[in-house]
Image (cartoon, protein in one colour):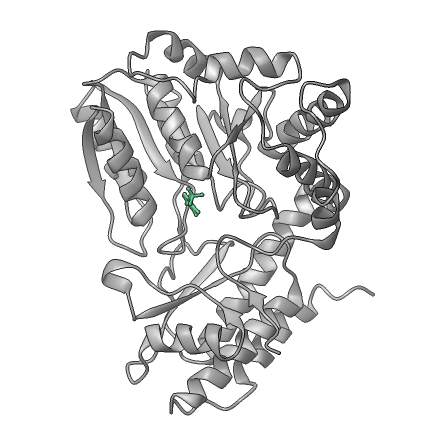
Length: 382
Ligand SMILES: *Cc1c(COP(=O)(O)O)cnc(C)c1O
């Protein structure tokens, strides 16, 4: 038997309590029984998003909510500014282009976060820009972008801030209303501790106004239609019933822990993972603004990162993510989000050390683990 540890930045592990809730016999969705559950989850989602706005639930992976933002808010030919510093920034570019938007790309070196000055300069130069599209946490390069500062810019103009928060919501503090974020998106299979299949999106007042002008064709992802249905505690189409029943549990777990403590837990796991990387002399992919959801580290020059990740997964039962495109074979990404805690970090680092040694890279076993433990000790209960 090989016991598996899923430590990738999505999908993430699902707690037994959530699995059991989803294992119940299916119920019909046009019933008071389902509507009660739905009402509970929609309210809890507002707490999670820190918004008074409706948080809509779509049956899709996270990209579905990203696409819905584009198709509901814009018209073909509208100019948008995309912060492109990784695979998910690239996804904003591709979706925008697919629906005929005019994309102005702000390219950011992989592993770096965008500077507010660069965005301000482009917005000043190009007043036609209707929105800034960005990731709060760019999972592919393990960096965070300065969403609060970007919101300070966009709030003062007729420019929307559209944020992919897929590894940020439920990981770090991203108060939608307080910061003035116009669109915030997440998915079920990351911090929400669910299988893939649900996507969530919330819009500010002024973003809702834009939906009335947007001329891109849309049908399945019609957010105004979805909002009308949600007001009646139902969905436009058949919802992902079992996932929503699971969502009620996972949101209850988040509420029981408390958002503040959820953020602290993620920050601590990330700090412990970075401390281990430092102790093992592994360079961070995003040293300046590392994501609390996932830590990327370069593998040593004498070790093929692709082989390392495959060996860890297939022979040791520990799933990390590798690098994509120019980072392929060069990095490992160790996730610490969702249903994870201190000993997932310890497991991750112990496995990493063992795999490095297996591939001939001499590190003293336990050095990274010890460094992680030092950080984790600080949060040990009395
Ligand atoms: C995982 C992830 C996505 C999403 O997409 P899926 O469509 O759910 O595969 C988008 N953006 C970020 C930042 C992510 O981490």
